[in-house]
Image (tube, rainbow, N blue to C red; front, top):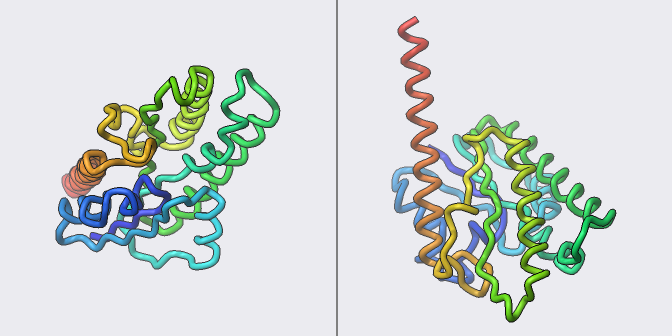
Length: 210
């Protein structure tokens, strides 16, 4: 089995927790016989992933692709998204991020592997440091992006980190997945892929019966 990881520091969190405690390592422990390639890069935006796909392409033969991208697009424009209300600038930036994400998903789907996307979690932010308005608007922005994912992908394709990473201990350096979160994410990916394998096995049996 071949698994490709694409995206940002949600997957490439080794700079924050160490190689031995990162998502990729935990996932390799779950799938010891699988070929797992981590093409995620800390700090990547949707634009970076598209550029990498265009420049390097992807080798064929992946059974599953795990995509985590979009958070840095919103983070880089936090000054805009944190302003209360709906503005044309917010709409444009959100439209650009979702359009690029859509293009990435379409490109990855060409490689015949099943694509799963991680939605955006919301870290524990100290209101005394960030302010109520910033946190409220940031959460709304996250919800809009996740709503796009729910609309653009099937229910089974979206791995919901927003309901998985809900504790303060799930984060380090304010927004990055912690050691605890690495295990949670790896477990969820493992559960999702195994569920897909069981479903496909059932479908094959159904075809054989007919």
